[in-house]
Image (tube, rainbow, N blue to C red; front, side):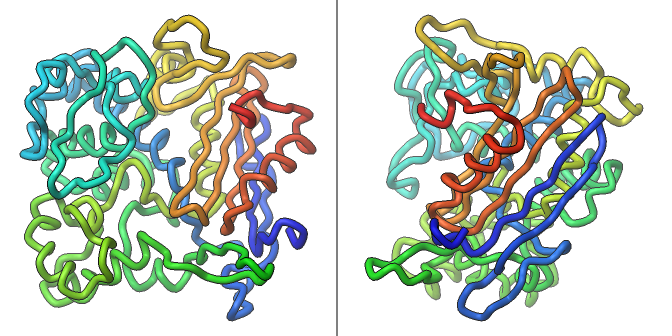
Length: 364
C-alpha cells in the first residue's frame, strides 16, 4: 500500500457460499487520518453493474421484463438519436455489452445517444446502456433505482449498508479517492460523484425527497440549480445527479461479498434468481471470434487453469479501483475495494496471492 500510494483497501472472502472473512486496512481519508473500519462505505464504481444485472434478471424471472425484448418498448429517452439500430437493442444486449453504444458520451447535453455498430455484432462496454435500462426499470416499477434495489436485493439479502444513492450518513462513512502528485505526495483530487451529489443534496433536503427516491424526471428538474453551483464540467446531464445503475453503488465490502455469495450458491431462496437464470449470468452469451475472455449477463468470464471464473472491475474518476472475482464451482469469491489511482495494481497482487490466479483480464 505504501509503495503504490494506496491509503485504504478492504478485502472480503466467500467460502462455501457464505461470507467467511473480511478486513479493512489503512485510511479512508489520508489527509485527515480517518481509519478504515468495518462500517466504511466504498465507492464500488462499475461493480454496480453486476448487482443491477441481478435485479434486472429478478424482474425477468417474474415476467416484468423480457430478456430479448427491444429496450425501446420499455423506455424511449429524449436523448436517443435516430439510428435504426436503436430498435434492435435488447435487454440481453445491455447485460452482455453488445448494444454498440459508447461507454459514456463526451457531450451528453448536446450529443444524441446512438450505436456505432449493429447490436449483437461486437462488444462495446457501455455505461450508457445500463442507464437506459435503468430508465426502463423505472417505467415498469414506478420506483427509483435505489427503491427497486432495496426491495429486490438489499433488504432480503441483509445488505444493510448498500445504496446507489447519497445522503449525509453515506457521506460521513464513505471513503475519499486519492492519487499521487508529481512529487509523490498522496492528495485528494476532485471526487466526481460525491461532488456532483453535494450540489443537489440541499435541494433534496429542502423539498423533502431524498436522492435515493429520485427518478430521472426529478434530476431533470434539478439541473438548473445544480449547474448554477457546480464547478464547470461537473454536472452535464441529469444522470450526473441521479443514482446510476452503472457506477454509483456504495457499500461495505462485506455487503458486496454477500452479493457474491448469491452468485456462487446453488441453493436459492424464493426471492433469489432461479437457478437456471443465475447459471445464465455465468454462461457465455455471445460468440465472437478472437476473444480471450467472454461476456455473461453482467459478468466477464475467463477460463483458467483451475476452471472458469467470473469477475468484474471498477474505476470511478480514476481514484476508486475495485474488483470482484468468483468461482461458482468451488463456491468461493473474493472482493477488494480501494481508494486510490493505483488500487488496481494492489488488488491484482491480492488476487494473485490469495487465489494463485494471474488473470489474462489483468493485461487486456
